[in-house]
Amino acid sequence: MNRKFSSSRAAAVAILGGALLTGCATPPKPLYDWESYQPQVYEYFKGESKEAQIIALERDLEKIKAANRAVPPGYHAQLGLLYASVGKSDRMVEEFQTEKQLFPESAGYIDFLLKHKTPEAKQ
Image (tube, rainbow, N blue to C red; front, side, top):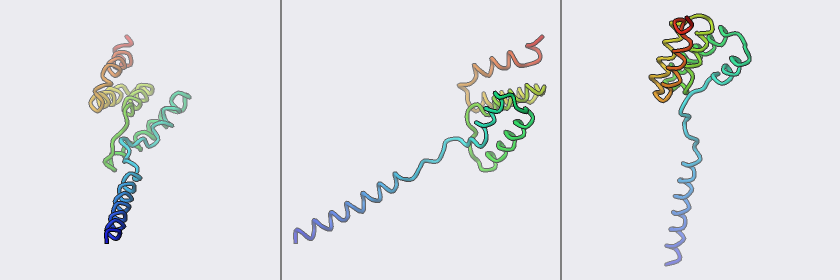
């Protein structure tokens, strides 16, 4: 009788252990949605078409927003740098301000960029 009780207890423990391990096997949901951000940064440093990079990042931004996911740190800053390189300083400032709002820890860097990338800073 005691033996029967212990084998059912062992079975219950095995089932519970299996359920716990199955729960651990599910990968966590990513914190940010990167889309093509990383390849676009690489293209930026290679000197590829800034307009094409803007189009790709804007397209991906729409996808990220539509899926109600979060953009990664630096996304809006990169978009701002691209806008600066094509002479759209108003859009650059918008993107930099968005980056600061989403990631307050970037404020020092964004303020530096605003100081050195705006047309007023170049005079």
